[in-house]
Length: 81
Image 1 (cartoon, rainbow, N blue to C red):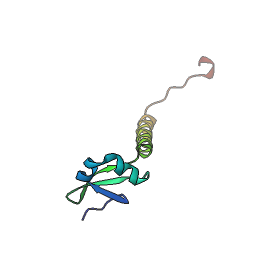
Image 2 (tube, rainbow, N blue to C red; image 1 turned 135 degrees about the horizontal axis):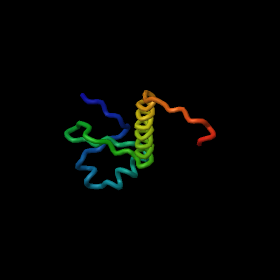
Image 3 (cartoon, rainbow, N blue to C red; image 1 turned 45 degrees about the horizontal axis):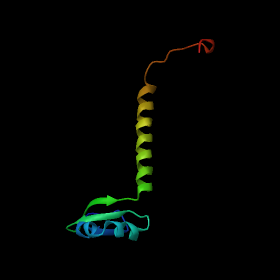
Image 4 (cartoon, rainbow, N blue to C red; image 1 turned 135 degrees about the vertical axis):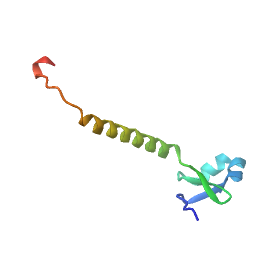
């Protein structure tokens, strides 16, 4: 059986019937969306989604910095800046 990474879950059919109610009942927690009793999607709160997106952006920046660390550097005197 597939693990569900949320404290609450709802079927797609129930979500279609009352999406606002499902969100309100979640009290800021993510909700697993089930199709035939298997998780097919997660509905995280908007604030949590924003945090996830910021962390993914940070990971992209870390990758870019690591790539550029291998590049050759050019020495520039401080007076020329």
